[in-house]
Length: 124
Image (cartoon, rainbow, N blue to C red):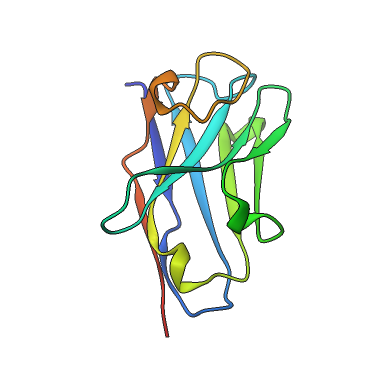
């Protein structure tokens, strides 16, 4: 079965760190653009970071620059989102998504597979 499986969400205090993973099952993530998106309560889903098939990184949210990083491990068929210096406003359900193409895009409609989402809560 082709799917993306996310893991690693949870609760963390402000200023803390958390890493979430996106593992591909049934298809490869290598050479494909993988995006991380998030949806906060009462808000629309927004793009966070994307890593292209050539490992070029694009940020779609200014607020995460310098705090969040994205990386991939092709041997594990997994993409990671490392989140540091977390703030309460980072609280959201985080989703990973795969494009069939190599280039990133902020347009959600261009991603063909989505993970189930993982909750990240930042609070004291």
